[in-house]
Length: 108
Length: 113
Image (tube, rainbow over all chains, first blue to last red; front, side):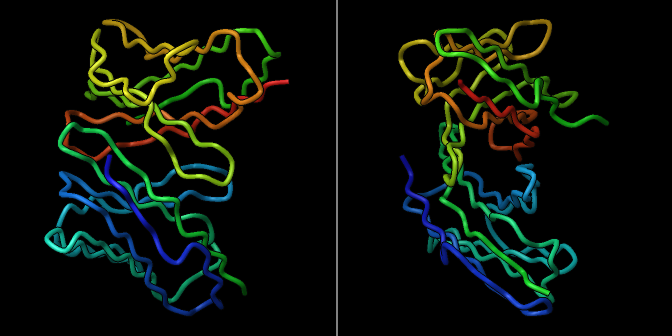
C-alpha cells in the first residue's frame, strides 16, 4: 500500500501564529484529502485536493502531485484549530491510506 | 441535507458478545467505506462496499468481522465474539462514486469490557 508520512507529529502554537503541515506520500494517487479531527473525535473535511492550491478562510492547501507531497497552511491560528490533522490519499483501487496525523495545540 | 449517520455513537459489549455498527450514507451516495481508529493512531481502511457488493475487504480481519450494504437500509459492520483488542473508534464514510471526496460520519466508539 501507499505510505503516508506527516510532519511534524506534534505542534504547539501561540494563538495568532501561522503554521505549515506537510504530507508526503510514496506513490501516485487519485485523490488527497485533509481532515481535522476535533477533540470530540469528529472528522471534518477540510480540502479535497488531488493537485493545485485551494483556500478556505484562514486555511489553504497545496498539492504537488508530481513530487508526491501536500502542504496545509493555517494562518492566524485560534484555539478552536486544536486537534489532529490527517492527510489521506486514495490509490487507483479507491482505497484510502491515512497518515498518522499532526497533533496541533493552540494556546491562548 | 443530512450527512453520514452512524449509530450508535457509543457501544459497550462484554467479551464474546456481538457488536453491530450501522452506517447510513449521505443521500445519493452509493459507495461506503469502513475504517478503524485505535487510540493515538490514524484511521486504517477496513472495507469498501457498493450496494449489495463488497468491492475491497483487504483491510478486514479474516475472522469474526463481516460487512454488508444491502439494497435497502444501512451498511452494517458486524463483529462476532468481540475481544478487548476490538475496542476502537469505527468510522464510516460515503462518496457518490470512486475517486470522489469521502464524507465521514461521527464514528462509533466500541468499548469491550
